[in-house]
Image (cartoon, rainbow, N blue to C red; front, side, top):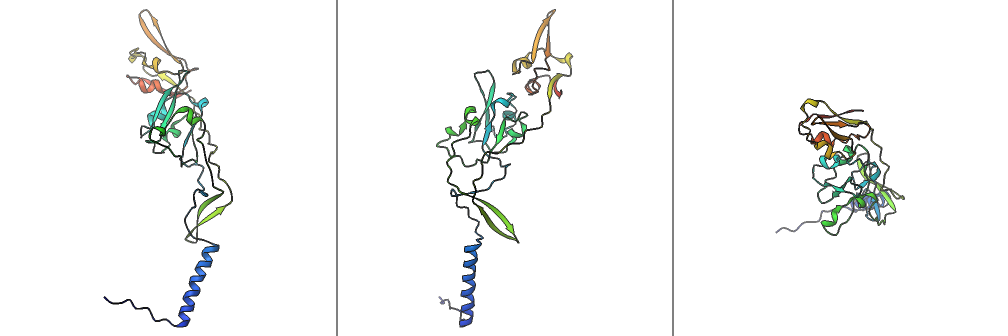
Length: 242
């Protein structure tokens, strides 16, 4: 085995190399290029559209079930409330934070936050009930600074500010397009009354005339949730602009 030989350097070369090392040290102490965030003392500044923990506004929910229908991870279940309405619950053990539920919520009842570091004791605790989504979870914060990644002249460095970033953001309300359910082919209706049973707003009703069951949709009560459209076996119900 050959011994690694120490390169032969002149005194001038040694001085130059040591001076360069000291220069790098001084630069890093004043203008560090490190990419480390000292969490929880510091917190990375997140954009307002971060797909984080979900919040729920009970008053805006129309019990349309769209959030449960569209969830690709099957993480949302609808829970019956004392007022005979159904509201969402979220299983964060399954949730992939795609936020399709927020995009599909026509009333803006589901909202996003910047909260992304919730801790649970076990898998059962990860099922978040409706009443737990109305208020944000208990937040214990130690951060005094926000850290933001900045690319300057092809170099990545962190910009630290003495501020506390808010984790609850004001969500942009969705553009409301009033929709109502409408039967497009009454002759094909089987009068099975499934639409009447699933209607949460009481907009669909039935009456019997000369032994014939007739269905009626009250457009003033209809919220345009689309439940009857989804459940109609003959596919003769459509959502149309009000």
